[in-house]
Length: 349
Ligand code: ATP
Image (cartoon, rainbow, N blue to C red; front, side, top):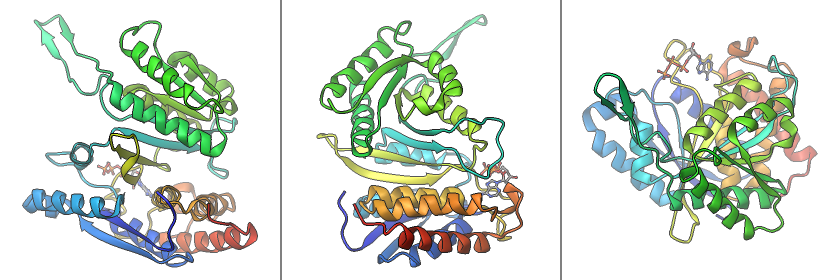
């Protein structure tokens, strides 16, 4: 996607703290020197209970119209909205950045700055398996060429744009057919990106080495379940599972991104909803990723760093030991973003 002089994106509103997270995003958006229009779609449980199909149809029209959406937390009752959206939009790749957050207490001193690119389908997650009598059970593990290719291409494109290296990780010495196919595809894609350093690593060894020398890892591309494990491991290293954001992508036959959805990690936090207490960090990072994806990399990066600056300066919400409410924290981010944009003379790329 290329930068124009305005931005329109779909916004999938959910439950609990969703409205407060959205308000924080709007506050920041209004202070960017860029006209931004949000196209809201109500995906709250109340609407889904009575008009589920209409709600998802509206979401589909909105994301297809704009190509990009922000999604806030939703309650799962009978069906998981995330699963419905993934299947409906054919999302096949998830990008999860995880980086050290200065100011957030952690047991680990290493500096993490990792981009996890994960195949969003297949692996062991497609098949819940079945019992064979009482003493055994079996499930099928699937690796497919198309989503593997899409994940690898996304990883290498991303790495190339930022001058990063790529590691593909799986258990290819044991899962020779499935992970073997994945690594074969990673090799194939790597040949199209001679400027991007790449090698394969066994996934278990990667986990150990990530803990011992996190600075060696930049972009890691991996099958579905490994990506899931790696995301939570990396989040644990930086001291928070709830402070990250992730992006889901769908692709056309040429391998170009057609739809992108950005969402904060973490749930609906019903215990604090409506009290102005929630931490909008993950939602603001999701918005930063959306800006970046839409070609406004300078703004995305300024917002991402502004949130880090704010936390590092000790201006935090209650969950991080501070005393700020959602709005006060967001105002601090706006100030830091202004400083980032003017101080760094950020130019759009
Ligand atoms: P869900 O069923 O939607 O996952 P939950 O309450 O079971 O909701 P979370 O939403 O992840 O799970 O909340 C776990 C704890 O973390 C709660 O105490 C909640 O208040 C807190 N929490 C979650 N998100 C935030 C946030 N953005 N800011 C502050 N606290 C949060």
